[in-house]
Length: 188
Image (tube, rainbow, N blue to C red; front, side, top):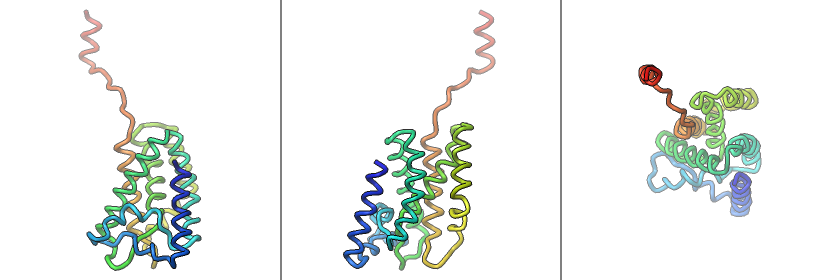
C-alpha cells in the first residue's frame, strides 16, 4: 500500500510536469468550498520533482515503520492525517494560494509515531518516536516557522492529524479489577 501511494504521487508529478504544472491549482485553498476536494488531492500534488523527493524519503521511512503494524493501520493513519490535516489547513490557510504536497502527511506520520508511545504506554514505541524525532526533528520543527512558499499550516495540522490518529488508534489496555472486588473474591 505504501509503495502504491508513493507510485501515485510520482505518476501525478510526471503528469503535472507534462501539463505545465496545472494540477498545482487542485490544492487546498483556505475556506474555499469550491476547492474543498483539495483536502484529498493535496498530498499527491507537488510543485517539482525536488519537492516530491523531499517528501518521498521521510514518507517512506516513517510509512514503513507504521506499516509494521499492518496495512490496515497504515491506511487508517494516512486517512486520518489527510482528513484532519487537510481540513485544519483548509480552515486557516490563505485563500488565494494553493497548498500542495505530502509534507502534511509526513508531519502527521512523525507526530503519530511520537504520540502513539504515550497513548499506548509503550517504551518500545516511545523509543521509535524518539529515533524519528532525532532523525527528522530539526527539519520538522524548522518547517513550522513561516517561510515564503511553505505552508506551515499544512505542517502544523498534519501533525495534529497524527496526534489524533495516535489517540483514536491507541491500544485498549485491559482494565484492572478494583481493589474492593479483588478483596471480595479472596474472602469467599
